[in-house]
Length: 277
Image (cartoon, rainbow, N blue to C red; front, side, top):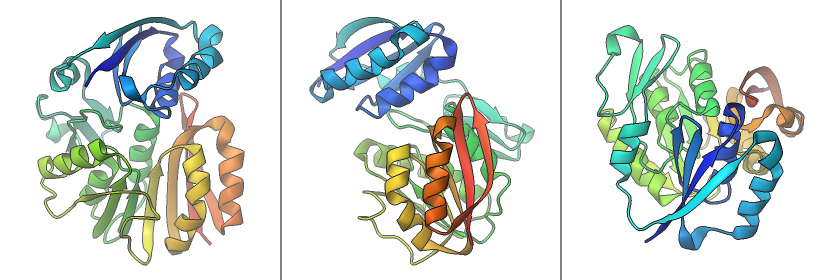
């Protein structure tokens, strides 16, 4: 199993945007560097037209430079340990890996995430915004859905905030495996992640809160299902899209009986909160 490695240098403000764009076309791992990031994809998964499309779209404005190579093997745990720093979301939550020392006394909550190839360590603006919102939303005794769970970080946060039950799922096998490992690490032994999307996994009849940090196209496609599964007064928290997408997301939400409660923007990425009227 050989990986293609792309060492990419770019303007700082475009790093997260480029990683998200590449994740959408099959890249499954990223390591941030002082000048940009390294991106990895299985050789058989790369589609040259999609790759060139992303690069050409941002080439000039992001000042992209690329060195390409092939990796026969890579020790992902060692790579993450060298490049993955812990983060804090205010004084609410401290997110670290097992190889970082605990700082639980400095924060209300501590989450341990060994990300491997999954998305969701809190470093990306969308995950950060979702965690920030979660601190402002009541989870106590709530039935919660975490759609497109990645590492399972939002599901873990929901449980730490007192959720009665969390439904977590993702379409990627490595995310499901990684997410379930992270649930165990954080001592949520009864929490498990399913493989599939919202139309194929086992879900509850209704939810108090639905979390979906995915991408614009998936959110627009699944909005009707989210709305149908929300209780009256239930909340829908979304992220995974740019500030330029707010109008499209909000319009689709309104068409499905969801009213806006607020928005957060960080590095051009956006998170929106809705309520079922």
